Length: 64
Length: 153
Image (tube, rainbow over all chains, first blue to last red; front, side):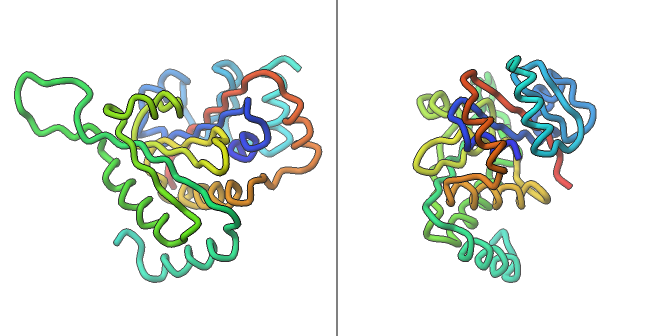
């Protein structure tokens, strides 16, 4: 889902991390459960995020 | 051989019916430690790099619409910077432009399906999102960096 969002706008970058292989990053973003989605270092959601919710989270992260 | 004959056939079928234009998998690996060690010791700088590379090479070999470029995280600094790579193993899915799609780690289990899905979407040069979502996303002016943490299942 994040990948598809990245395709729609060059300003959107979507990175997926295999948490156990990147323990430092997982710790930095306090990953306790997966999947966990972090937007612009601040907004985060645990669990699967449907299209409309992810869009809402993106909007909230950039304050629109 | 990473895939079994059955898996190969299944992937081939999925890709041949769904791939449209070409996609390049830009893969980052590391074969030397990032720091110079005072003594010679056996070090594996990247536990899953070789396995991931073998798998991606075999996968991209299944379709002539898929290409692979391999770069080293330590030696190819310009490419690491160009793609904003933070660690290895990692890959970017690139179509006629870089869509900002990255995967870090070995794509196994469910993540392998997500990789195939990503390849197909990039190949089609458009997502499967609804028109209203696509319109809302197109209006965004500020940089958005989405990081999703997963574990293979």
